[in-house]
Length: 324
Image (cartoon, rainbow, N blue to C red; front, side, top):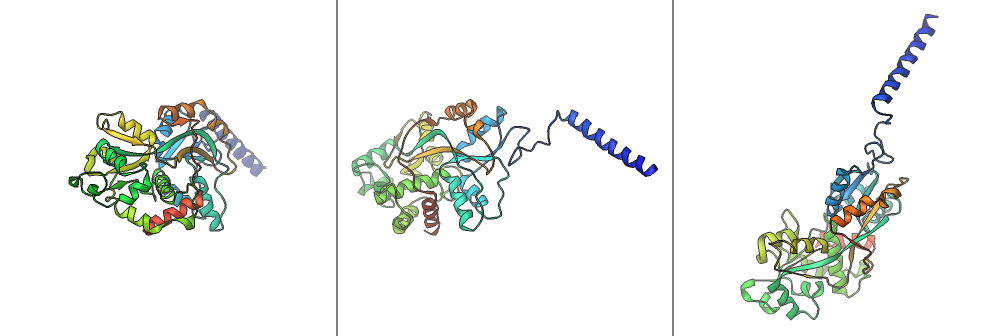
């Protein structure tokens, strides 16, 4: 009888403890959001660096908990078979979620993401140069694009509409193995060189790619655009960047002498929200707070550009760049 009473007493104590915890926590179930673990009903999002301002706004406004990291690092981390998403979704650029899943499926793993949800916000890819270098490129090139800039890379400016005192033509773009923007810019450069926005992996011109990369100055902390503005004309002849970043810099005192080109093919960096498999983020992608955060950060709504190369082609291009 004493054993029965003891068991009943223990059960009652556990029940009371659970009730007290429920009252203290306001009925919270431990803070696990479906798929990753935000605070209460708030999802946790991985965020590409290009979207850091957007994600910080979402976190400040209590819409989501966020983890910001470079897109290439996310691809490398999640692209292995045994990796866990540990979040509810990824706010990033298209087609980086597909790139992760293709890597996993190639290694006989399972996809991490459901179908990416379009936000309908994007930015064009720009070429940015100080006005004198821009004028030289316009004089030298039938059309200022990466095909012309890449062919001139590493050669004297004096042979390409500039002055001998400028030295050689130095292109700039962010490292494609870490930066999502860097890989998209490199795809634009290769597409321009090949004259084919829909180029395939076997079309990649590794020699041209190697010559382009050899002409890029040693990369240091910060983006190529930031280095151009901080260090001036000696840093780069022209750099690839998101249009929204270029326009923002051009509105500052340091950037008032910049010229911005939007070269062909007009690829656009499109913002997507990729939910983890089985996670429903439809309410978030339709949330006015997300639209407001993207608008405030300068992203553009409802713009149309050339279709990007596939995720597999982008990954092949990155591999070719790493080998160059």
